[in-house]
Length: 214
Picture 1 (tube, rainbow, N blue to C red):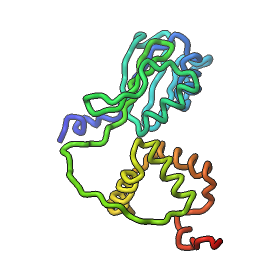
Picture 2 (cartoon, helix red, strand yellow; picture 1 turned 120 degrees about the vertical axis):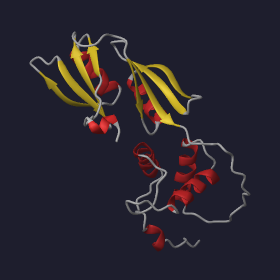
Picture 3 (tube, rainbow, N blue to C red; picture 1 turned 135 degrees about the horizontal axis):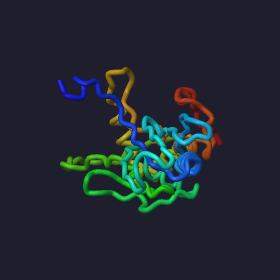
């Protein structure tokens, strides 16, 4: 048994020194898309924000010092980059593939704290030689448009996106159902693409598809 289990170690919540509590709360909720969790005292000088399962504490003029660094792992760093850049966050470096297996970006807050947002890069080694073949298929027009846009978002060819979908759908998971290549963030993208291309039917609709006659 590990030491953490022996002593009942739980989650870790970094405490950031902030020069102005309101400024920090506004920056993280309005620019970095964190959610406010709670604050303490009147007026508040201590509190917390959340981002997925991550929680950060703010301490005005108290604990810690400016210029701390932390790393937060996420599902889609490129989509997050586009969102927060549009909101005016201070991005030190945009997403870039790093040799340690992460696609990473760096963001600075008003207290000079730096957050490294990282996304795992799919394993591409060792190479697996395959023989690809052309497949003739007719696909509903709007679904085809979503697939093409989704492939472009993932920096894949349409064929590679289909391979990913097929391999995941063929893989059962112990919780029930099948594996999915889509994260929460990717589902947001897919939702936007479905609205863009006017898809108003559910996942069972293809059983009812009939081709239009001229």
